Length: 239
Image (tube, rainbow, N blue to C red; front, top):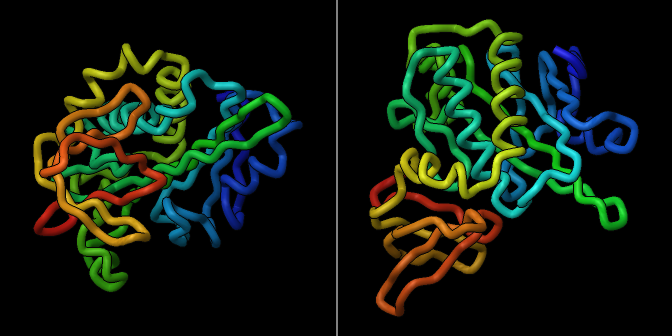
């Protein structure tokens, strides 16, 4: 596979690409054996050991940046399914779920050069951690591919499949991905908690807008929320 950079250790695969965005070609991929200072959504820290697969993909001038995270989530589901022969779903906006456990998170970051918008897609997959690992880390809603499928995919093969699917979906209009993305969402038509810096509110998740925002309804009517504004949880827990 072309344009793949393998590192022994890095602070963040996203940071690595951000600092080299101008010199690297479109579609470049970086991964590392360990990641010491990765970042999840809304500034949450995320480190990666050899039991995990951190990777980042550089997409230069991708179309429809506003809903790219949704298309990447769909791509990762498809890639994991092709490797592990399992069924993957999405908890809006970008948590990949197998058997009610989160196995992967996604963080898309924009990098601006004049009027050029590039996007770095950061992906972290839990590959082979044990149930005891997640219990000790106080992550009751997380799981690994090994835990949930009984398989440990070869990291290079999984990396290749994810990168291939992401590049395909990134070039595909959201209108062509929309129905499949909605089919995989486990939040739709459920009551959810919308958690933001300003507090929490309860609503029903009813649809996905063309920009990838979640359309919700409460006693005051319908409204849209973005993944940058809120985190979504079920009324009784994570889902």
